[in-house]
Length: 453
Picture 1 (cartoon, rainbow, N blue to C red):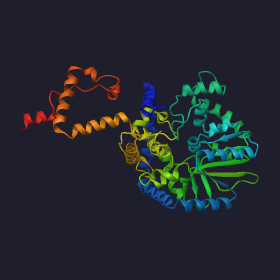
Picture 2 (cartoon, one colour):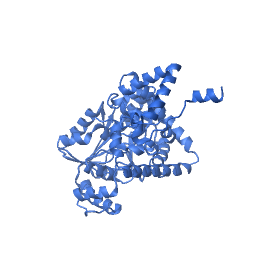
Picture 3 (spheres, one colour):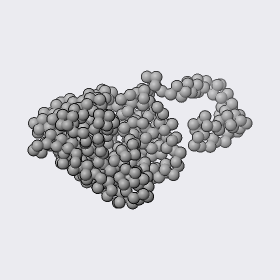
Picture 4 (spheres, rainbow, N blue to C red):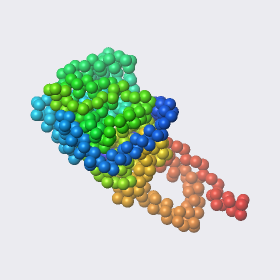
């Protein structure tokens, strides 16, 4: 499997796309800033949300039991899944019991994490993603590249080509309104004909046993309300203690994500309607392990707003697919190594550690500090880049000896001046995107001895 640097090179071959992707996401970041500056108590909201989540994580077991008890009393069937495979088996067993071979699904990053679509397709179950962005990447046979803006890497002309091929829109049609109406017509029949619907969960309330789904398109509501079976997939960290706490998180979520004051639809699901079955699957999939890692526990506070992606200079110029994991960007780079440290050892290094991600996080996750800590863990565990490790050992030896350091400096200046091709070549990652500087005539130490000695 290619690592982040290699996958970034693929994305960077199209310079115009990179620039457009960068500018678009920075525009979303600016919208976020404008929205937050209109709230006088924004920092107090962030602190409140962070403390509420801290409280949940410190007593997660009891809150989960409280939620299960209240949800069962409401008529919801509660399932527990230790990992992605068990989650997928539970979904399939529910569909199989009802003889259902078609399902409509709204946005759920957890199901992307579990690779549910592929699993069900292998079992003969047809799954249609009803979120517009998710539908586009599903038709393109690609994973989402962003947790809020799944097809942000696609231009409208490319979406027009996809819709022409799969949905029958006019060839060359690129008008966003017409393309949206095309998708709406296609999805209308899907909503009316599917007996099962799956949604994600943005927040679950321990106090009441209800869960909340936030969308801008109303697709989760259409699927859930028209179906005979409603399945909700939820990571165990999505709990909040009381319903009143929603006032804090709903004010933070979309302002951080898209600059909106609130989602268009914040739908509460507490009990199934008469004749309907409602299931919720509580999924661990490595979250308990992360909870036990003191340095990385705070990452479970994440409310999946995507603000860290919109501000990250590396993400904006490398694309979401370069992270080769369901949740990309800075937050994904601290979640993924917890699932598989060896496979995702490259991701914590895909950062400048500038701290912008931590600054915009609505629940105050120390993202850049956790990226740095993951680097230390990965190197200690032996999963770091072997070439980089050897280079660092050489540098440690060089920097620990003044004599060797001065000799290396002279050799480096001579090489850059007389044989620049030894440095300016594709084997030097720095040279791939930059021109190497002109070699100085003398070192700073030599200059200082001559002028200040």
